[in-house]
Image: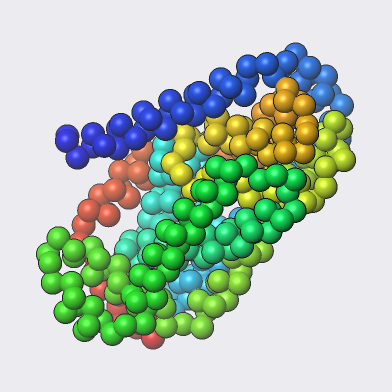
Length: 338
């Protein structure tokens, strides 16, 4: 019971912050005008935005297959389905529980230890962070005035990335015998498992493919934002640069724990970005609601369909994933270590 208390407190804190952000967004948004603005949307561009928001995760599926290529040949369809179920879980469960669930599904469908797929997800996040920091430096140069908390957050993320990347490099390229000599403590058994899995994945040329595939995955997320700019007449003059800056700020915000669906924080960060471009505050708040709906609702539908195909319920998946994570990891079959 005591071990769950910090997690419960974190969930409460995150939800309180999200509610506060949402209250700030809704206050003074003049929501009565949103109905008229929605009626005048260019639905062709809305469709582009909605479809692009779903299709944007195909590059992530390709990249994940690259990361796990030295372990086992993977089906792109299964990988994509696991990602969509994970995204659905992130929209309905707190603290990004979908990351564990997608790794669990990938492990289950391909008969891999969960520790291996979790290690691959760690590699993905480090690759994302490296490219995101690069995009942040570009945004600082092209944005009218980047908010100070965004820049400071980027520097903090950069420091964490340096530490994680150093650990990743050591785990991938040092000999396992040396690592075993350094990590004799029994309470560090999970570090042993993680290091062995990273060591296995790291000796592959596909890892370089995965690193460079991370940039398209990041950039394609600009498309839904830009398409909705074009659909929403009051903001139709905003260009790809503004959409790029918004994508960077939203992705940086997603690094910290958020409420299900990122509701509240997503809207507040959208408003902050639009204020950089001198968009009226009420208009920016209304657009944040529209953008959240157009990006989130199609992912909810897609994820629900992907979940239905699995034949499992979300609570069952979450429980199985947690139970599997608590079990000792098994070694990979020799045939898959090549």
